Image 1 (cartoon, rainbow, N blue to C red):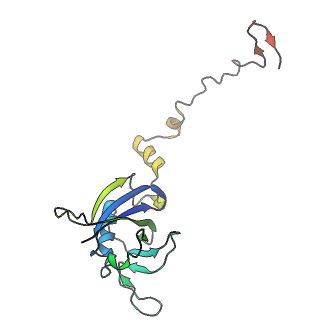
Image 2: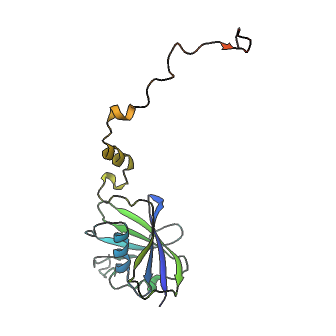
Image 3: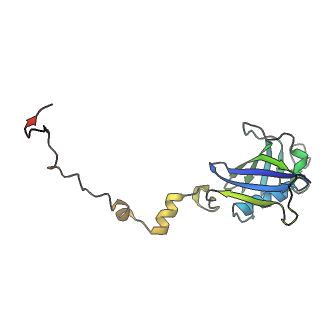
Length: 188
């Protein structure tokens, strides 16, 4: 059974990504659960997958909830749709959106197909983590790295300015003239 390797980039920072191996027979729901686990999200919210192209445009949608579209036909379901049904090209792309309120967006790209399934592993499985996962409930949906540093070290305005004193900024240390090597002043 073919093993598909997807790279799941956080849309706001492509240096933050997770590689996830999934069996071709597994569903988009399996991939959804692997993504939220890899990014340490709580899994309490709905999600969508969109088929995409090289320009990351959204096409057909797959929902974690069964809903009807404009023509009252049910949307494609993550639970019932096997991933292999939509892998048409070697670098197939999807857009994954989690939590419609916070609108977390991830770019999902197929980066490899192999037959090297390890019987000892349970798939899907996260095989690589790069970068620090964004905090799901931080304000604005971002990593808030500066805010986290300030909180961790309890830095206030006084402490932030500390170390950036006025050393070397004495007004009388400078001169309008440059001394030449002979010790005399020379105007430029």
